[in-house]
Amino acid sequence: MKLVIGLVGEKGSGKQTFVNFLKKIVLRQVYSECNRTAQDKPLIIRQVRFSDILAQTLIMWDIPISRANLQKLSLVMNDAFGQGSLANAARFSIEGDSADIIIFDGIRRPEELNLVKSLKNNILIYISAMQDLRYQRLKTRSEKVGETGLTFEQFLEEEKSPAEKNIPGLGKGTNLKIENNGSLEDFKQKIQQIFNKIL
Image (tube, rainbow, N blue to C red; front, side, top):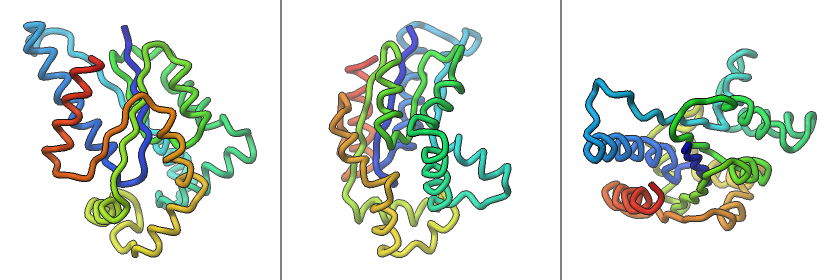
């Protein structure tokens, strides 16, 4: 049966690291326990990032993919087409998907949380970390335009945006919470524990 994992978490909390490591755990576990080989049909894990849907729109309009632009676009879409517009786009993108595990990454609104809850065999996970630690991670990774030179004051302003400020509240509606304030190895151990619980 297909498993749907929904990830809620502030920027820089470690959502992408969670996805990357979970993929490694799943593939390693499946191949060792089921005696699968490279010739067998692989287990398919697909990541659907809500921000990717917005980023595709920005690319088409030749607008830089910055966090501010992603936030503005999500607000425009919701204002113009209703609060569930991004969730509907995400649902559309996975209809008929044959993946064994689908990871919805970057849930920021109740409609997106409810989308995952409406799907069969789902689990919602909240990943959180201390504010100053998340800021340092953002500056290090430079995933989006403007993150390299991001000041702490700018970071705090972004935290107040409608797309970000509701995340802790959404985290209360999840099944599991991971505090990612330690080392990478500590985080990986916590992901392994979750894998042992849910898979």
